[in-house]
Image (tube, rainbow, N blue to C red):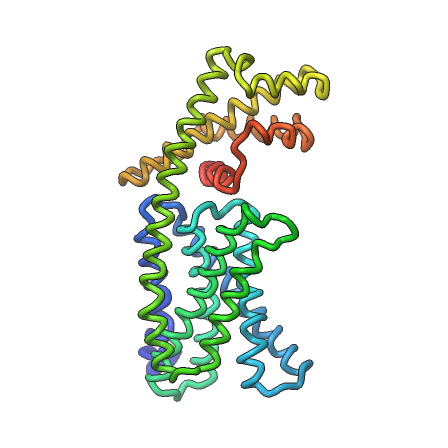
Amino acid sequence: MSAKLILPGLVALLPVLCFLAALLYLDSYKLVRLRTVIAVVAGGAVVAGAGFFVNAWLLGLLGIELTSYTRYVGPVVEELLKGLVIVTLIRSHRIGFLVDAAIFGFAVGSGFAVIENLYYLEQVPDAGMGTWIVRGFGTAIMHGGATAIFAVMSLSALERMQRAGLWVLPGFALAVALHATYNQLFLSPKFSTLAMIVVMPPLFYLVFERSARAVGNWLGSGFDADTEMLDLINSGRLSDSPVGEYLHTLKDKFKGAVLADILCFLRLYTELALRAKGILMMRENGFEVGVDDETRAKFEEMRYLERSIGRTGLMAMQPVLHMSHKDLWQLYMLGK
């Protein structure tokens, strides 16, 4: 980058990265790690590169003007590519709450925007400072905000609309609408940029406030339920509980050795779930707690038991295990 592009480059690239850093700072439970965010930003950069080739191919295939393509087709393609990263993160249990959904969504959009603005810096190096202000404070924030909205809405809809992947549709539709509206430039570019600056911060603040309450409620109720389950197992009173009665019904379906592994898995799963919730509580109070060797050993044992029990056994355990996306996320958080 030549010396004359240093200031335009800073204006085009820094605002979205600073916004992302502010979101990380506001994450009181430290639900995401910096190295993971960096990896997700890199993922956004990769799909930005893919988007360049896909858009070029579709533009030639459809034979429409660039302006029309940018307004009506480009937003669908680009939000689809960014959304694929978010769906992968949700499906692999890397996202559990609205806060980390918002952060990871904005991280994907940030990576996308950085590559896009670097491309424009190379293609139109003589553009005025107004162009880079619009691209840095407007377009880049729009990319991050649209994908964050998709991530938040998709996570919210996940447990209600699991079938046929319908949970991704409302967030995707809104992200495309926001992107397309911005590209329509109903307002002037400066007013569109101002709208991003004014609307996005309070929107993210509301998401963080709502998620903080949800995390607190989930920690409280989940901690009590896991403690009760572990107490039943360790005290030998599990057979007298509803969980024990359910496990008793499995005697005719599984061999004795497999039933013993199922009980061991239940104990380990509950212990690790309690450990994960304890770590979140410590983080919320400013203490950084690492994963010790004993916990790693328990994860290795649990993975062995998963193979021993098999898919059928794990499905049979679902009625007695807390296995929502939040509960599976906490085990990923502890084991990563």
